[in-house]
Image (cartoon, rainbow, N blue to C red):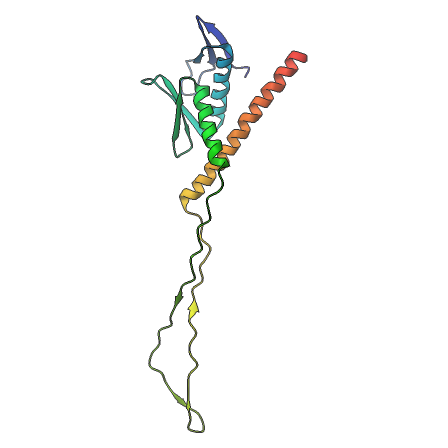
Length: 185
């Protein structure tokens, strides 16, 4: 996170991030009570910006950050971005780790009787009446169906959350390695 500066302003620390593409003339500052919390704010911001799953905004009325997950828009808020992001990650991890839903019961095969008209009796060569063989009813075959769109979207969200969780782990791992290299280099 070489593009981030952590500065102290009075009693609080601020993670100063480079300008956002939507606001190229303004640096973004994420205030926090400690230097470590400011660094956590910067990491959370980077993780959210690199993720397709998480989005955030600042609620001026509540004076809190709101992190939302995926298209469903499940929202988590906290005074610090890192806290809101952590809540969102925990909720998503629980949702992803939950056992998959029970498969839907298979529909019983439906049989449809064949329409029958009047029986025609054919006479055999010796004058005896020949009975027609009964017509067997055909079973309807069900073609495989695709999962409903909501279920497919939930599976996509679950996979995206796994990717985001792995991204977050990799970011922390890379930062730790870089710090160790810098300290013991």
